[in-house]
Image (cartoon, rainbow over all chains, first blue to last red; front, top):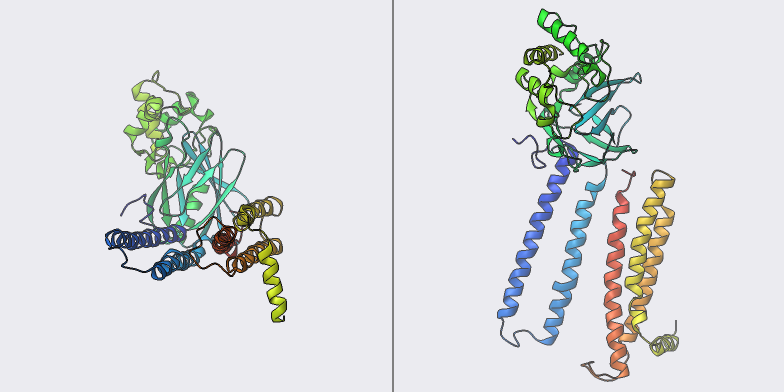
Length: 307
Length: 130
């Protein structure tokens, strides 16, 4: 099964759109074949095969009446797909902001707080999710093809997308509006989870990042602080509280790095830290080539403990 | 309505000139209704943030549009049946010109009714401004 396809759906909205697409494509094809056959018959027919009256009648019925009825039937049959899902009272509100070139994600809690995450959207299956979409810099577009249609993220505006997942699994979304050099490298993982598992996960995200326990992780944490990583990245429970880049509090629970583009691993973390501009051209993260490779690897080891 | 009265009305309608201006009445009303629908949606969303359960302005606008188109089609129908002069109606005479323009107006009125109904139909599904 494809992880990012409007045809392998895991949401109510996307399933409706897929059915609509199939219905319209098949209907269009059938109508095309009928017209093509009539056209062929018409140009091959001998003169006077059909009289004036018969011809006029054919034009009236095949040219006006039947198309009107068929189009009306298709319109009425497909109109219900326009009706949007209603956001009920217990809908989960998730704020997602597009940034060049990553996703700032916030899960609102019933007590009015927000749990910050990045580059991964987790949603409970069966519960309505009310996405509040915005942008920090330029226009982006939020699209999870298997879940629902795409919605633009416009600076200074909050757009809404209400969706409901029907099938648990790991999927993928992508930025669908050209937003700069790394637009094509701006994706994210989507995890549709069993509601109980989702609640447990959200509770874990709420807690502070785990303190480093091994000597190497402790050294990595110190290097992280000394090199000013916290100026842009936040690690809950430490002095690092930057908001310019993605939140790292639980970065190791994600399976991809750099907004869904490379697998999460120590090697890839090191590569991103040292050479971000080559992994992600145009991103605001500078290269840290002046750091010793061993130090970079140590920071990567520390990040790997942030579960 | 007496038969004489009906004939009088038909004669009066037929005496009206059919021009390209009367021909474009139905599609113009369709176009205006189309624009009205978009404006109504935009204004409703901007001012109220949603749609009324029973959208009075929208229903009245649609009924007015349909009424004008149907009236113009009915006039064209009567005019297209102007008696005298057997078919075909393709001479450059006043009566053939009238019948041609009237028939074209009638067909456009039919198309415009369908167009207005198709434009209005999605309103049945509108619930919020997303």
